[in-house]
Length: 286
Image 1 (spheres, helix red, strand yellow):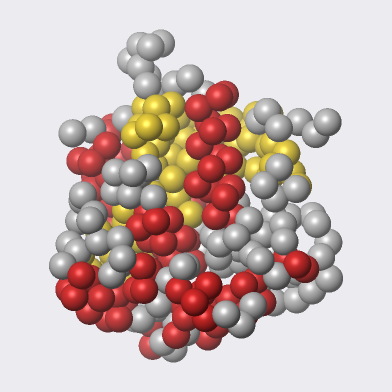
Image 2: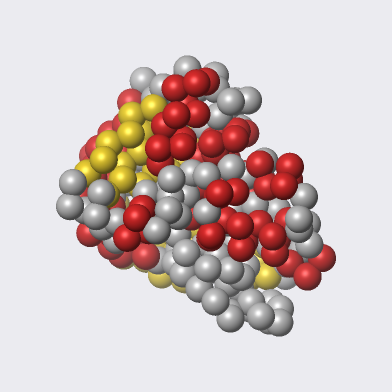
């Protein structure tokens, strides 16, 4: 029996709390997976922290955000735990899984693949079902009933689509430079064709711009930051205006902030992450 209980593989103190990395066997993905938790400092043994899930973008692992974003500073003062999963299954050696940066390994798109070859790519179930249960079973200091979700690029797409389909599970959502209309951009079309096949109605289940018209009863304003010097914005991979228009039509509250001069990198993310943590803190610690 593979070890489904998480094993701690590293720990580093930061802003009086701890970054801890764990490894476990994932039944959803049929492979061993790593994830990070930032535990803020605790004032008493009985204190329970709400959870902010962070979903990373193409090519990332569970490490990029923890190392580069600086999110721990405000998470520490606001008393929010950060939970950062990986972006795809790893080590399955499916033919072609590492041929391109935008599909396969490091590019799970937070969906449940239905094409047989990619049947282990069940990142939606991993993030929505498996991980929260793993956390509540193994980390009594986390209150997984108070959860919010955020992410960058492909992970922003994941955060928005997961939030909209599970409004009962998350208190708030935010995103940096998200892929908000994947059915109409090259990244999304490539991923969805390969993971989901040619049925376009299946694609719409993982497209925030399509979903907002059905799931618009959002409790907290959706916060999106987008750099206006982002090359993927100019290559029409991100399409924030489409989501903006869909939110207006659905009367869903969206704060879309175009940030002049910023690109698609973690330099951009770290410049505005404090606002996002505070946005979630308002919803998580009312």
